[in-house]
Image (cartoon, rainbow, N blue to C red; front, side, top):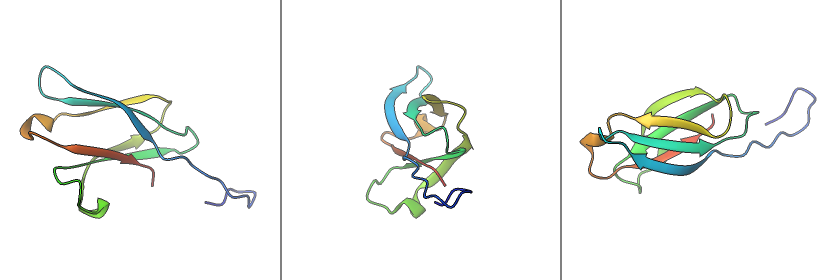
Length: 88
C-alpha cells in the first residue's frame, strides 16, 4: 500500500517457519513477519483446497517482533489441519 509520503510500501507476507504438537494436543506455530506490518491473522482449515475466505480465523494480534509464536489449542480435535498466516 501507499505510505504517508505517497511512496509504495511492500509488506512481506508472514512465513510459518516451525510447527510442533505439544503434549496436550495444542499446535504451536512459529512465524516470521515484517515488523512494519502491525497485525496478523492466523487461519486454519481441514481442507486446504478451500479458498481462504472459507478457512476459520483462529486468532489475530499485534506483531511485536519476529519470529513470533502462536498456538492453536483446538488442534487436538482435528486429526489433520492446515494453517496460514496473513496480514490485513
